[in-house]
Amino acid sequence: MEESNRQKKIAGILQEDLSTVIQEVLRKNAVKNLIVSVTKVSVTPDLGYAKVFLSVFPADKAKVVVQEIVDMGDEIRYEVASKVRHQFRRMPELQFFNDDSLEYMDQIDRELKGENNPIENPDILPRRKKS
Image (cartoon, rainbow, N blue to C red; front, side):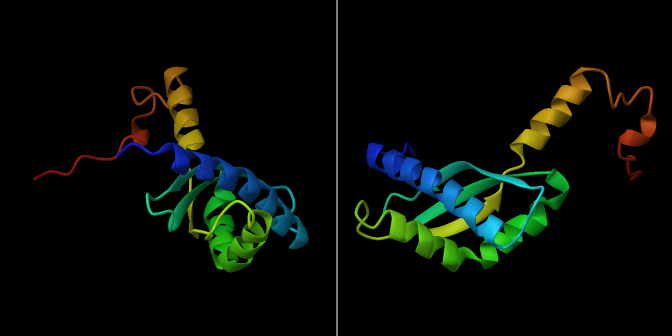
């Protein structure tokens, strides 16, 4: 289903404010050497829920960081709500997800360049199961 203009505007406002709030919260909790960016926000038609997709660098810490952000969800929602209180009637519930699309694109890029060639290194491919 196509997003309405209202959903797109609210998602844009949320994306901008969420990125600043998440950076402030992580800085306040003394998390260093970590880059977290909000890649996409998708809002439901009733504006009750917002799916927030986060990209974490380095990627090996992504699960842990996203789980920490989920645990701090109420605090983050409160901070964002205080920033947008004059623009929204009601603050949507936030649901956080890991966005691994950059890792996927990097993997495809490496494979196109010839790295991870299954002909040269057959251990890359999973073994076929015999039936």
